[in-house]
Image (cartoon, each protein chain N blue to C red):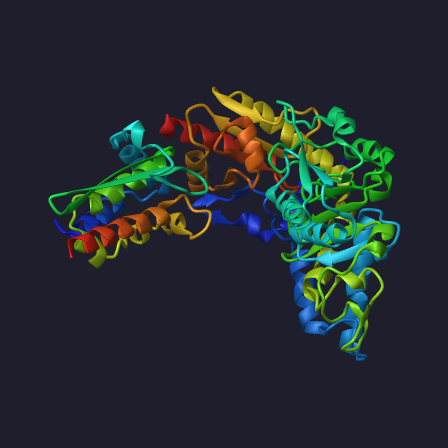
Length: 140
Length: 406
């Protein structure tokens, strides 16, 4: 599936819930299912600083693709991390560069993206793009 | 006590809002309060009836704006019982008031090696301006620590003060813990040793009666937007003897008496500290907020909010694993808490979706978070329009959130 298709899928999954509490219930479920990040990565080196919760993001490259791992100390943010990883992990750098990560806005979760005092999600998206751009340069 | 809560709530149409299909319960009053009709109407009236720039032109519009603007200065002075309206300076808000003192008082009185005592429970706004000042001047910040229940260790003040101590900066009420600090006693201790005191009253003036002469405060700052007034207006009270000695904060129109390219002479206080066109419409509508608080009475408000505080504290304590930060016997309507194994951010998000507006995070008080070794708290803060029913709604929403997160 393409990045675009996965984003469409996610938006559809959330549209099944009318109530905001249920949408967040689903996010919590995804957060609880997210594989725990190895504590060796929970260091300042991988920390994306947000105002309200801490997020760690790790990237590694195998066979030309970037694989991401991540976690947060807040379970709702963990759910958001899970969604992001589902969209961008295991992709070629160019795919990430060429695609807009619009599903967050589509879900109505834009409040998470306020440029200051956010939960680090915007910073996380930026970091993912930086990895993609960097790896893409290394390839060429 | 006569406290007509229905009448008061009717002054605030915004309280009838529904968000996410749930009735709004606004419990983030320590961040900012909602605005009553009186303030909104005053704001509209100025623009419709008599708007003009103040203190300058000799025409009807400007005259009337000037006299209303100056009337609010008097009103603000009376509100905190300043001895003269000359001691009332209008600013953008508490933060600017603090920066003004740090800049002007600091310029005049702080020398290399001097010390400023700042408490551990301050908002960043009452830390950073002093830090910038100490960097400029080669001076030093000395921390006044708190105790586990969230009270200042005021007994340490005599030890902390020495010949180099030039100022103590303390908040009247903590924005995180709700602790009402014994500022009168602190000021007495400081003055006995010749040290002036700056009081951050941003979380106090809307909750309890304040008398700056009785406190004998040297400086006292607060913001209109936290007391049902408009945004962008703040007050700095300063004793005349300090204000007279302090150099201007910013240069511009209004604050001058005569300008030549060689030399400028400055206006009298308070105008010396008010460069440029001030927030005229904001200040004038702020008058309506002061009127409302005065009409209801700060003592009545304090009693009403205290009953909310006690009720909410009791209810919250019944939740398993819930820990309240700040358990002083003297508290204003602020409760900070965490629930075991739940991140405050998660709680805040779910409460929001239940229609409850409150704050989760570090509340711009990192040193305090460090003291308790926590990433943040959930904070409930009351205003005069909150009710027991709203606390019940909060409790129901909390129960549901905890169930989802456990």
